[in-house]
Image 1 (cartoon, helix red, strand yellow):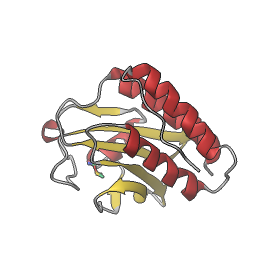
Image 2 (image 1 turned 90 degrees about the vertical axis):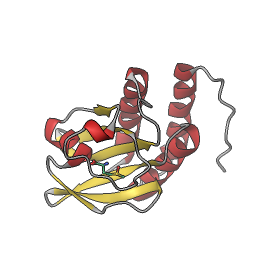
Image 3 (image 1 turned 30 degrees about the vertical axis):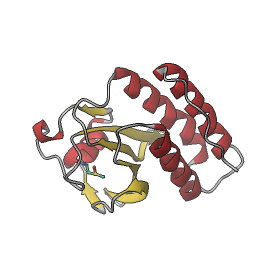
Image 4 (image 1 turned 60 degrees about the vertical axis):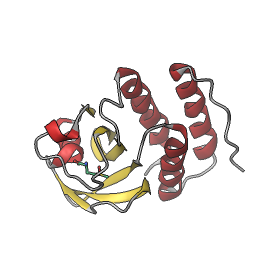
Length: 160
Ligand code: SME
């Protein structure tokens, strides 16, 4: 049974704790969907000021909606489209302080104001992306980027 821990308010320390919680959640489980579902739920309860946390998975040349927390979202996103498709195309994390300034941003939830998308690359191949939306501008910074990239690294061995 997962128990929520109390976070300290120190951003880096709390992210370190979340990485440990993620390891504990996925270490005994090999089912990819189950692990992605728990990972999205873990981020949703840990991160403040977010309205969507989840995954898109690369299937037959496009991103398809995977496990998530938040409102129902657009199902398919093409290569290079929106923030998610751009993360796939560039293979780089997209840190977007204001989605309205991002050309081609795809608005699934009109509340979203800022967004971070981390590509998931396994053995050189795109597996999918981690996508997190916030209802406030400038929600994510370089510390979030560093730890969300670590989060994806910890998650990767539990995916196939
Ligand atoms: N805003 C994303 C689409 C996915 S939703 O945020 C859940 C994008 O522009 O790719």
